[in-house]
Image (tube, rainbow, N blue to C red; front, top):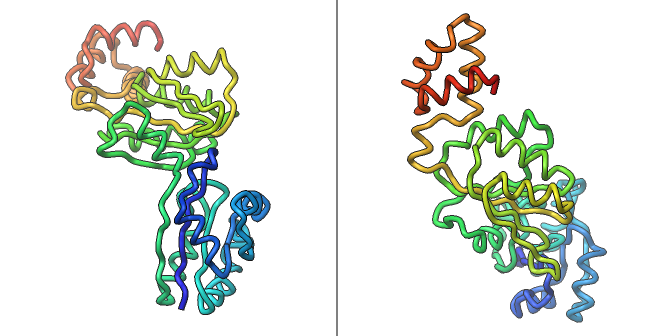
Amino acid sequence: MGTLYLVATPIGNLEDMSPRAVRILSEATLIAAEDTRETRKLLNYFGIHTPLTSYFEHNKLTKLEAILAALDRGDVALVSDAGTPTINDPGYELVRAALDAGRPVSPVPGPSAPVAALAASGLPTDSFLYLGYLPRRSSERRSLLGQIGRLPHTLVFLEAPHRLLDSLDDLLFVLGDRRMAAARELTKLHEEFVRGTISQVKAHFEETAPRGEFVLVLAGQTDQERERWPEAELDLAIRAGLKAGVSPSRLAAQLAEESGWKRREIYNRITSGA
């Protein structure tokens, strides 16, 4: 009975390929790859000639039986396009099926874009929440951020370049102007980290067009911030109060008792139409 190995591969710099990863891929009877064309380039670079089979989002369920059968004959290695398999890439169903069938599953650790960005972000790393790609629609992004915005953990997301500015708008609106880092092209020639507040990062990419896939790392809410409502929550309460016919001065006084905001700050938001 063979072992299913989850082999991490470089996210950019080929020197990050570990000797153990090269050995496992060379000795396996089969490699299940998210994109066989990309994996073939990697195998050719390291002189590996192990047979390949495709395993990606749209065939991952139909391939389970064949890959489990291959495990009866020897070891199988699972690789994604880049980085660590199953982390925002296909593989969970295969791991679950292998475990249910009594096959050993073993990780071969290595590159991972979310962890690399977190480690170099300059933000706390002792407790973090990774949530993959942000939702595509603004309403869904804001809903998700509203659910997690008060957590103390550092937040880690992936984002595509064409959605970056819209997502930064939503992050700023829901979470406030927190510290963050935006990382792109990790380990590659044009690797870049932009660190600062959300508004500063947004200003940077308004002047410099976003390119490449991004990892966004955001500070969790501090104890002081948890005592104060996010701007989005305060604005919702203001709109509800005004709709109910409460006067601006009375509404400001009421919300100051509940929200952690100063009465004058709330009154100014009401009268300015913020």
